[in-house]
Length: 164
View 1 (cartoon, rainbow, N blue to C red):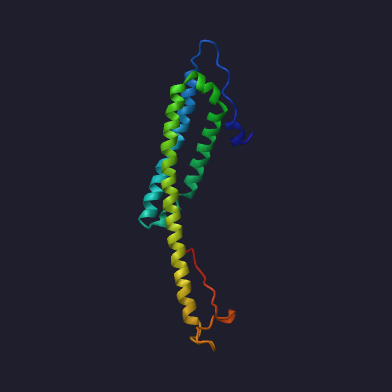
View 2 (cartoon, rainbow, N blue to C red):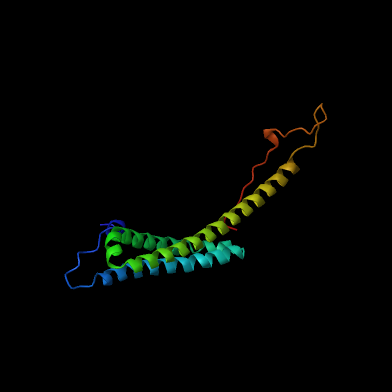
């Protein structure tokens, strides 16, 4: 059985006299641990990207994927047991919802920073390409006195090395 299916199994039925809140607390702790670990990594990634250290931020990708898998597994486990948790530990469930809202807000900040870095880098590459194309186009005018548009012969492809 793969990890994803195992994470979707509901909690075993509780024996009479055994506190259901212990199992609920374990699920909540697993989710909180996963969210906290992922949040710490995302905050570090956000700091690095804001500081312009994109290469260093990219080295965290493997860790980020593993922590994301752990988070998704914990959320799946929690969803499979949500009805039972609502009955046995409603205050714990509301605490998890509040923590998850804060987690989502931080993810939104991270996504905004990454989108900004992407837009800036794309703008830089487009600007460099425009300058290269200007240099390769002959400065000629049409019979109407307008600048001639470059033909396909004059367009030079731009190659970008990601290893630098």
